[in-house]
Length: 397
Image (cartoon, rainbow, N blue to C red):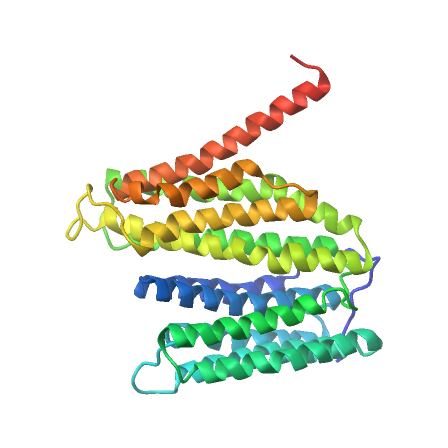
């Protein structure tokens, strides 16, 4: 079964197999959120962010692969199913990626082994797709060589614990990310910018969907009440505002710049805008989902909490800090594609963490309302400013 390469002149769309592949990452994101919820501490948050970095690298690799060849045809389809199965094993081991539970297999090593296999399958498929492109094959070989130190460090980290273990993970991920950054100006291929941008837009929707799922999970075992209803609406408002911030302008501008560029410049834009800058975007969404989950629990669990109880410590910082990280990433995308920062979003990104000590004093339902209204207010303010600018350009009073 041959591999079918994607050509420049065809209209390459996202395939059903790619969407099916993404379902594994939906589960992996859910597992990561639960990992942080079970370990509500700075260390637990750091572990969750490290897992997101690993998952992101796996997912991005297959997006680039699917932009180069038709993954739903020929032998590439088998490689995708093999990677999907292995990635599912990675997802299953996330709760034990840092601390092995008694009995059974040693999960930290199993996590690293499955992660390495997912990355290896990706490089093998890429190498096969580049059979007529020696320059691309050389880059893939460099990627493989650069992957080995990262995997070796993660293997060593499996026998450590606590902050030392997380530190080794950080060094491993840094080595891997620097390896990709170093090769971003070489001979990668990005023939279908529309397909590429669409894939990243879909993963943003998936991550935002996780925040909505977190709301449902937080209240699923409790009877509905007016406070729960109000808090859930606030949570959905926040997720909707985050959706609007990305898809109203950022997604279109990023895709337009990608389509206008060509060759090495397109590869650089694809790597900077999507592979790198979308990582803090997704991480911010996951942290917001964690904060919403804990906030809704405070509102719902009347046996252990009253409506006057405020959210404290790690959960509230996950909510406000996650939204701040999301806003900074969006502003970074504007800086990369338009050459200027979004000052309004940066101001809110600074104001949220600054106000967090005060927000600890208000009830959890008020906290979610304040954060949701701040995000929605920013959207309305930006929309009003854009409308005013259009009227001034057209001369309409």
